[in-house]
Amino acid sequence: MFRIRTMNKISPLGLELFPRDRYEVASDLPSPDAILVRSADLHAVEIPGTVRAISRAGAGVNTIPVKLCSDRGIAVFNTPGANANAVKELALAALLIASRNILGGVAWAASLSGKADQVPDLVEKDKSRFQGPELRGKTLGVVGLGAVGVMIANDAAALGMEVSGYDPYISVDAAWNLSRQVRREDTLEGLLAKADYVTLHLPLDDATRGLLNAEKIRFMKKGARIINLARGGLVNEADSIAALESGKLSVYVTDFPTAELLGCPKAICIPHLGASTPEAEDNCAIMAVQQLMAFLETGAVKNSVNFPQCGLDQGAPYRLLVVNRNIPNMVGQITAILAREGINIEAMINHHRDNYAYNIIDTEQEIPPAALDAIIEVDGIIKVRMLMK
Image 1: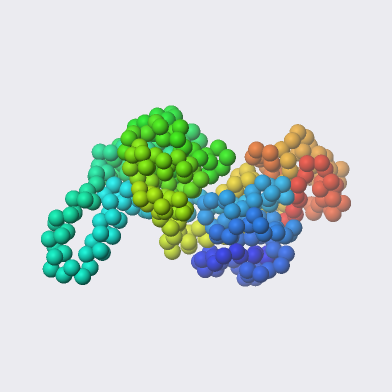
Image 2: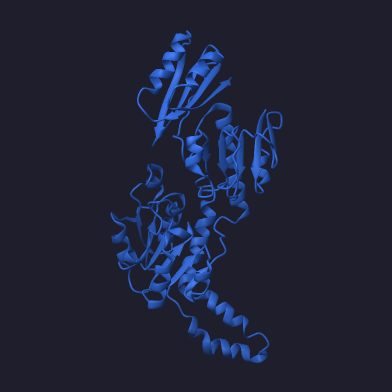
């Protein structure tokens, strides 16, 4: 029986996938095997020593102590692409509201309430105050061509925009899905110099924090517009406000309001609605649960942010799973211990990611406790787990 502790409210469509004869699921379970989380911040939460995996029903993992989890051999999963359509649709809306001053016009029209027969004449007289440019023919720069970036690039091209993309780490799958109409830029500066609109679709980490700052904004066209529905920290807030006040930027649309941005008339703050659709909630929960079940039941790793992608069809009855630091001779020491016990390896796979490695080893014989203890004692071994088919 696997024990799953839930954090936040998780879509029932995801939770229903857990077979009740093999899984116990609740928000207050002690000693869980895994944690299923949506948006709760786990940095200040004590993660029990029994936890083998954390699955996040969403893309961002900044609320999860990933480095701590890696050092303890805990796999951290996210659900890239599950909420991509929801974010893409909001990005398209952001392009329109950044251009047409729709929000300003709607607010002004609401202020006419009570003016009775004067309303039609006032609308015709003052509607020019809210004029804004069309998107067709303008250049959109898409920074980050993952699931969301590719979708917004393709749809913007279909709207008649000229689209440029920048992503030095674009995946093969993303490249296959990208429209041929999207131009590839070799540098971020080259993209910024051409774009009338820039939309960001990147994770937040040490390399991307403050990516758009005063130095980078200097390359942009006067009057350009920035859309950031990815992570607030991607844009240097003080530098963006200064650029808005000077007229270097026309509009900054963000899904991450702060007191400072709310006080800036040219900043349009959306209350973090990027993935706030029932469809996205369902899709993220379903993917998070499926990945968690695969890992707990077979050891397969897919969409982990700290473990390498790894999977092996199980033909033998016993499976050994080992997490270790990515240093020399780890596999040799593990297999030597098995050999001393007369354990024959039927199939094996070893993958690494950065400073960590993951091993799946299938055997016909059950590995005795003494051998497991010996493997655990090897310097560099982080976590060991046995499964039986």
